[in-house]
Structures are given as C-alpha cells and as structure tokens.
Length: 251
Ligand code: SF4
Image (cartoon, rainbow, N blue to C red):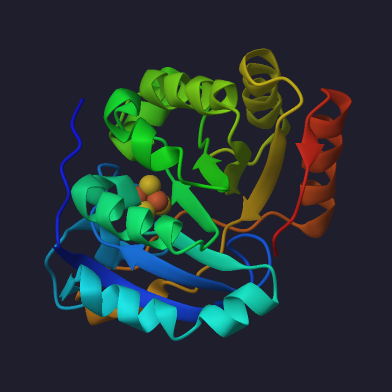
C-alpha cells in the first residue's frame, strides 16, 4: 500500500465561506491536476499541476490559512472540503493535509471524479466525513470519449466507496450535449440503482462560470453544451426517486 506524504503541492485556490461543498460553512482547498479531460470543465486550470493559475504551496502554508477559519467552520457545523481538479491526483499532498486536519478534529469532505486507485487512496478516504463522487455518463464508449478515462474504474470506485460506510453523494453534471436527455439519464440512474441502491445523488446543471479562466489561459471556451431547464432538472430528480435513489441539494 502506498502511504507516501508530501509537504508541498500545487494549489489552484483556497476558498473561504463556501456553502456548496458539504455541511455548514466550508473552506474549500482546490488541488491542481486531473486525469480526466472533460471539454465542459469549469476549472480548466486544474487540468495540469503547473500553469499560470496554480501555486506551489507548502502544507504548513495551506494549513495556516485553513486554521484561521476554524472558528467559522466549527461554529456552523462545517469543515474543509478538498476539490480540484481531482484532489487524489496529488495523493501524497492530500494525505498530509487531510491527516493533519483530521488529527485537529476538523470535519473533512472530498469532491472526486472517481478516477483513483482505491487501495492506494483508502486510508485518505477513511478520514472523510463525506465524499462527493461524480458519475458523468453511463455508456462506456461515450464516457471514455468525453473524459478520456474508463467508466469501469469510476463504477468500481463508486461501489467501493458505497461499501466503505463513508457517507457519500453521487454528483451528476447535467449537461445538454453530454447526458441531459431522458434516455441517457434513465440508463445512468438504472446503473446507479443497481450498484449503489438508495444512494443520495445531486444533479449539477451545466454553467459557464469558468469561461473567464479559459480566456485567462488563452484557450477557447467550451462550446456545444447548454444548461437544462428547471423543468428538465425536476424530471431527472423524479426519475431518480422512482428508482429509490435520493435527490439532495447542496446548492
Ligand atoms: S473531472 Fe472535473 S476537474 Fe477533471 S476535467 Fe473533468 S470536470 Fe474538470
């Protein structure tokens, strides 16, 4: 088992007073690097470790910023959320940060796209109170085509997270041009109901808030995607409930 730690890593941002990434008020630490290549990504600076929008930080620097927020986090029942990019992409750095915060009694959450080696990451995952894990497309060929990574790994990790006993929420980026049609959502929900019956899930509608980052990086903004209507989102939540899945919202 790989238990490596690292005292420095590439950070995209540390965002205080976040209310969308778990219970209560959160400080969200965005770690750079991601194995997927989703063309709709809202955080394109997370696609590589080192770029004009990332900073190499020591664990002590990250932790000292987070610790200043502890009165707000604890007073609200909140904590720290690791996001990205894909936080497990820098697993040794994530291990250092999360184990030190865990030892300090801070509640932790993780947002992951589901592309990690479960045996290597299990010790870090066990420190989390809540894991958000993405499920983007139910068709193996389409999943590979859109993200560059195999669906099988994501499903395997979903199953392992569900069986670990850690609280988790399946997050579904819901995007016209990718998956936001009834037949695809039904297939995705049928898969979920089979491998993680009764799972909590959250549909996340496509947004364009990351477009400014593409411009800052000198890259073209995503095209060919659109946001489903409120009515469509309600329909998808209804389809989930019909299958015994539990729609939740952290928005
Ligand atoms: S998995 Fe998330 S962070 Fe990685 S490329 Fe896809 S949308 Fe972006």
